[in-house]
Length: 222
Image (cartoon, rainbow, N blue to C red; front, top):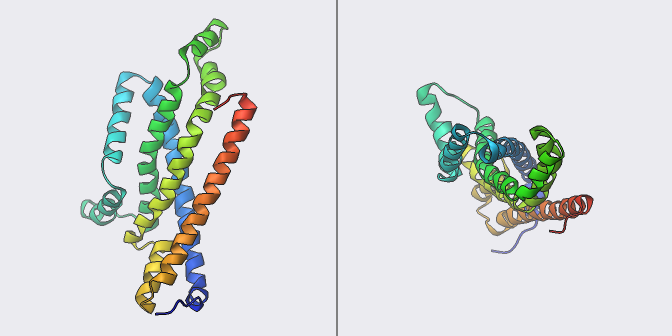
């Protein structure tokens, strides 16, 4: 079977729509994951014992089970217990909770990686706990956490493909439909690979730029 670029032009609108849905899922899910990771990460590093244990249970639950299982159980099993949610809601929420568990560990490691001497110095200058967090811990945590955060964003981007099981019309879903209609596999999956590769490379470039700017601004050498 010959390679037919005309198929990509014919299915271009569906592929573009799928790419837009993929980006929406990724950005919304990543935003939720970042908020959860920030709050739970600081809670796991600085909070009381009960909070640290609660965060640990959350992290172990969502890191210990596949995203596919989590979203499928909620989407298909939820109606049996009176919880009915739309596919997009389950997809974005599931991606956010799943990614939040990984972001939590990244933030926690970043906070605990700050030398204790700097915190003690802040106390010696009369800074309050909130001022120490804002002026001493938070800037350094951002620098320490940025490289693994970029990696996590890339992983979450590729995990959006899992959400096609919920019939969300993201890029993988549209490509699968294209293969079923045309019986062509090379052209659709080439488009899928190029779409994800372009987004991953763009994320990596933005991440490197942000890391350089932040490191230069804070005068730290990573």
